[in-house]
Image 1 (cartoon, rainbow, N blue to C red):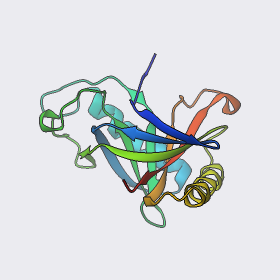
Image 2: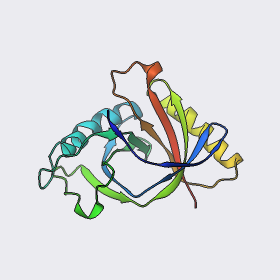
Image 3: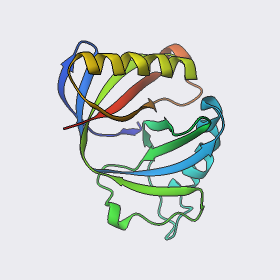
Image 4: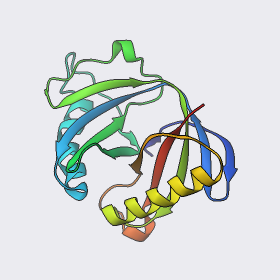
Length: 170
């Protein structure tokens, strides 16, 4: 089974979870294109990195979720979370200039789970719902809402586990 990014649920407010994430490391690729194509376009260079296309030829296990954040009108950053325990200081440099690594300090985030396909429309609608619920609960979001995909593309849509998340001010 694919290792999932660890977190602790701090509290639940209706159907959102407030989570505490420990420090982690991302492998990222910035890509241009629409939401649906961005994940596919970024997958190959990210997968190449974790299967050894890095200085040192280090291999990492695939983890879930795959994260995606819109950073411009048609630009997205897609990220793989490296396995728990990977030290940011020892992460090998990518061989592909499109790939970067980033250490993320521990933080709190609000998450809303949902099932279904990976359409931009679905992620945006759930993202707006999350932002409204976070604000109504008196929490302060930091940054933009981002999406998390947990299942492989061949999983039937109704069975897919997805989330939208937003970091929270501590």
